[in-house]
Length: 199
Image (cartoon, rainbow, N blue to C red; front, side):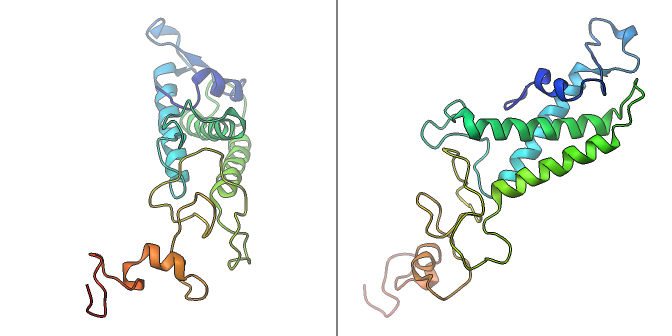
């Protein structure tokens, strides 16, 4: 079962392009229609893709860092963005599988526009710094409020309150993050003993 969206919400975006049919109720009348079971499976697959695409920054399955549940996330903007991503990716998957079957609609242009919109939202949601401004310590776009960051979050910005400090490879002005994230940069080894030989 889908976690972030529903077949009803996805089907609104596909009105006039794909028709659905519960084949268990009328197996003989499903010509030109996508079975509901297949549509649901494609939505599940699409949601997995969204989780994979956002996993460089956010913990999956998506959850609030306060309640450790998806329900604990605010609707605006966090859940709305996740829902939109899940719906867009679901539309792409369904159109790939059922390319306007049973209609005279050519879904290729629509699918291409949806893919471009999906990619733009993904890029804005996980992009660390604006292109050409690699030395800044600011999010290119603000993170999704209350969404728990992944423990291995390599997209977090150094110094962002509540973010995971990461080593960004620069030796200039990054002593604190190196010390936290890389034991070899610290004055003690992994067991807490002084590298100079002291205890």
